[in-house]
Image 1 (cartoon, one colour):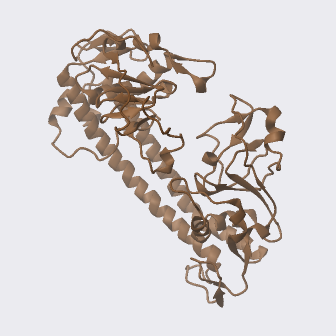
Image 2 (cartoon, one colour):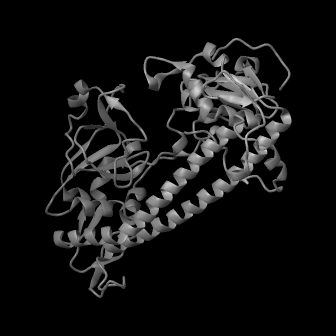
Image 3 (cartoon, helix red, strand yellow):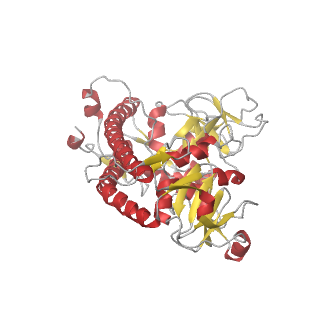
Length: 474
């Protein structure tokens, strides 16, 4: 059905380089004619809402650690009220697409913009303003000294052109995009399930290797070597000739970089935070923060990093492990750096052990905290690892790499397919909401079916203004 879609019969110029030509019968209105500011406050009894590039506007969880990086003040009387259907914009991240329609009555940060949004179909308005061309528009309307600190300019925002099809077309567009997103989301979900199964298979191979050694044959059958109790909860027996060590006794140096949070700057030395630590590697792309080179010695006064050192996060998240692969980095709080004893523990074998369930369970057992679980550094000596000889560690590392290689290839392929599906969805949404393709007939032919049980994720991603004259919804 999607492949059969065609353009509208006639077009006119929109006046926007990002929107291009638009259907002749669509209205082009300045955003200022469709919004009015809201100033209602002092409703701490309403649920707390938040805005994110990936989700739009959503009810914020008070127990989910992933949503509680920002401190919630005790006094919420100054928080703004956003009514269901209001447009909420994070003015400092509008250039990233952090905006959306409030799904219910709630309160939002005083730093957000809240507007009555006079458009007939709020679901259409959400898809339109969160589409890729509009992220570019809001980016143009934002300015500041540094990109990461851009602020939405009210005069610029008010001039953003808004495309307004007829109410029936708005409804048809929403219906079609719900259907298309449902199909795409089901495809993505199926691929994620396969990735999860492959990940479980990898984990089983790794866990078997770091707790029992290698199989006696290439068939993967259990070894016949004598076993002995390990003394480690969740581990059980280990080969007779293996030893159990406290992990810190397998290191020759450790450094905890707790202390004052360093000042972040636009460029300088890359600061590795807990958010950059993945399960085995450092992600330099998802979160980019820097500190001044002149501050590097002070920040790293407890010890400089070296390639091959191991990092362990102690909180938010707890238990993520990575290998340092470059030395021109600074390390933030909640990270401990270890330099391993080469005669006791190989770095690659350490990564396998520290990511294994038996080690992670030891961390979780000693963790405290109601939302963000963390462990005190004083408990590190209690963490145990089961170790074969260095020679056997080398063999196990090679075996795991060989056995997991085809699984890694399959996972990478599936992840790329998911990325392509997301890119396709982003382009499809942009083309539909800006009138590049006509979906009216296709929407009319769609069967009635349950709405997809997924969040509205159509964006490419990721307080004061003069009230507009009151006008009827369009």
